[in-house]
Length: 529
Image (cartoon, rainbow, N blue to C red; front, side, top):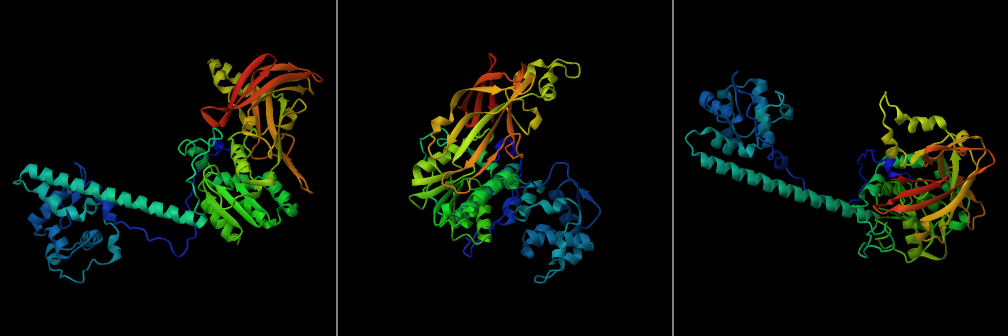
């Protein structure tokens, strides 16, 4: 799968799934529950009178002015005509538009109101302070602010009570909104499957033991649409999975297939089209709600069942599956540790003699000689606009770089440092230390070591499929992973450059990797996170 660090900035556009007829009725709170939380105005507001050219210092003063100078007490009109917030807004705009006199306004009878038209919802004045007051508080606010003879303590008490009431209504509205959100989640879960997560967490490994809040960033990154677009547009990746399934339909015919980390459901649909009797697609990220629509749009809902949740926490609707498919690969193959989840699913759900695809993977290393790029990234810090920033090298060099390398910069034959059999590998075998030797093909300087991986769909397949993320092959979204050397090493064609590599999970973040290279007596640890 594409990796989170380079996709966390992607923005998600909310989309709605096509709902069933029995969508639960949701509470629709009145706008006043939210409007009542707004302040009536500021100390320096200028409020134009609705009847004359005078500007007052506050809404309350304006209301009092209208009462004293024009004989119209607006709160009384609100009560007389039983106006709600919208009715009040229309009345104020009607007065301003038609320059209605106080006398004419007082003569408006109950019943058919001249401002009862949506055209008066449009404010006449931008940010009209009279439109920003809550109808319910007109009388209370006016009484508190405008009666010079009224006891100030009573006014403060009234305001405190009103504030408490606004807070209570806001809390009720928020609680109702949370309840509605929960209803929607339950509805969506019902559309997918009522996944049982009561079994609790596995204790098989550090990834399985991550709490939801600890793993939120990982799964939320896969809720963004752009990351799935990038993966789907990676033709090497996607067409390899498609060709493997379509060209080996005998492997999938009438089988029960589990897709771990299904994303948009593309692999599940390939499996269904290849003849699978049932496909169970599992994903914890929010993208699964789009996968529901995608599966329905392709009339595959009778074959594909989708479940939202972590594979380590849910119970599948079947005891065993015949085949597990997953696109779990990360940068340098093992970044993100999603293979741990595939291993868990294999050990818990795979039937005897079942299959896991891809079934085999290699990690390879090669030497890189690119002096120009080394100068740009490392030697650059020796002189930055006349200033020495050499200390930055200690921060820059340990960061593994994910990029597409030019094939001509590779200066050695590749060396396979790890082969993984997905049908038998254990989690502990994903952390390893191994010696290697790179046969140099050119007299130059070694400036970096590059890592990449190869993927094989092989076991029991009459038509075998494989692809590589090597610099010498068509590029993929995985690119390559480069480990830059702080000091280049002089090498000659025909000689071997010996070294040792150690790969292990970062204890602080088990989805990240720490990779240590020992090369020509120098040791450097790189992080991939």
